Image 1 (cartoon, rainbow, N blue to C red):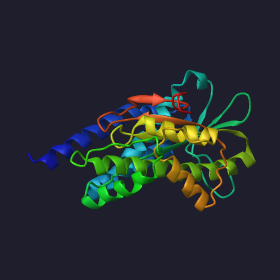
Image 2 (tube, rainbow, N blue to C red):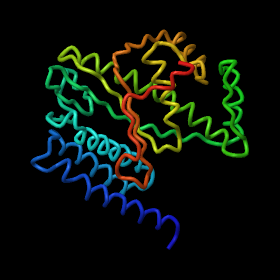
Image 3 (cartoon, rainbow, N blue to C red):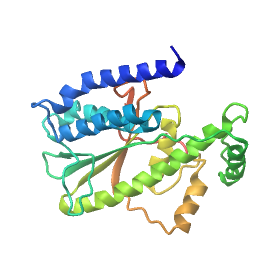
Length: 270
């Protein structure tokens, strides 16, 4: 059996394990997740697309399993045990949705958006030149050290790309959250999912600290570049997101291997 066939078998085993674990949790009549059928159909559609188109379509499966993993976290949260959980409910007139909405007992909503960040930077000579050019814009007291012969360009490129995605997804969620707040106020919570390989939890800490305080950390390698990009683009963040979450889920796991709510960096250098 070839390597490709082995990989396909492992993926099919993974899909079967996801189906066995999540289908009752998401679709049973006694589930607290309203709209769970929609989420499940999106997962099965992603699986069907993968089986038809192959590896190129597998990213959508990963994204849907991440949403299922976050749904499991929400449903098992003891502080939300008495609350219904709504999946992509109609909120505003423009039909923009938020992944999970939890009506709070004290009034208002908890708005939870889930985003998967999976950068795929290259490791070519051109990619290394990008690293050489960008490191000149790091703060003077920060050194981001990678080795050219040990996937250095890819490691740095993935870190740079992940940071860009954090900002892109944050701005998108800010806009949808602002529209939702016109209907009903509440706290916004943005959860970023990764495998733990392409980017690390500490990189999200840097971004979360900047977003929540308005000041970049002193040890943040992307501080100067990000600040300049915001200034040049005349971008004013709404800062209406209350917290960021982190889910680490390697490919061979069907549930979150690591879950951190309220991501923040160390007090030192904040």
